[in-house]
Length: 336
View (cartoon, rainbow, N blue to C red):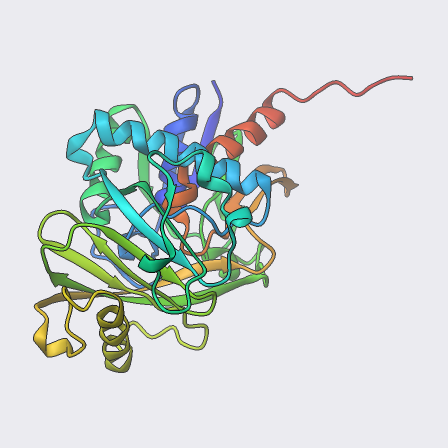
């Protein structure tokens, strides 16, 4: 049994702890912990969270999504108090064809939708059974589940990964998201912060909706509790934690064009109960899952999923587990 320290208590860090703690002793260290008041520097609590497949740069990333979906689907049945629920999605794209829809063979109840149902500009429409969850319920629930299984949580702010050397671990997992920009011995300049803003409204709308044009995307994520999260935005020129009312008006304008029977274009006509503003840790060259030996520490990096933390979650965790095992059980060098 190895000693594992995971830096980062978001969904990636906790999913990794869930997998590794089956065979190892795991401690999660982070400045922000589940149950804290959310801050813009911590991504996971702000997510709308729906499982919408796609956006993969490789077959490896697609497998990670499928691994995550399988685990979350199982949890939606086994743990109803987790807030994970099954839901039907109507998913439309302007920049894809049937050949691009690699998930058609994997998602439950998958079917292609008829063209007459497409929003303006869409070239493909699909429907399948998906998943949603509420981060404000799920993250504290998940922490409690991990603590009961023996995972320890420790509040600690690191300036660099080398600051963790005294914790006594065999392997360190870097699941810091965009914290990997500021860590002095990582400073990954490939990371960029993509600002997201959503609106939470009261509504009986109960089907997951997505229309991605390739440039913008519009969605409605029902929580199936009488509220719906509306979005979305991708801003690369702002890290402001404040609500941008121009974006609020734009979101309602777009959602009204798609679902006029459910949402007014005028924000004041809708029952707004909250706003979410967060930063997504996007990585230009794709998700970083790799091991490194630095300053005497065996490190596995696991970050860079942009807004796909929950979608990749347990898939990344399994990939990290494989790299941890490579550290612990290295293959003997071939001798000629």
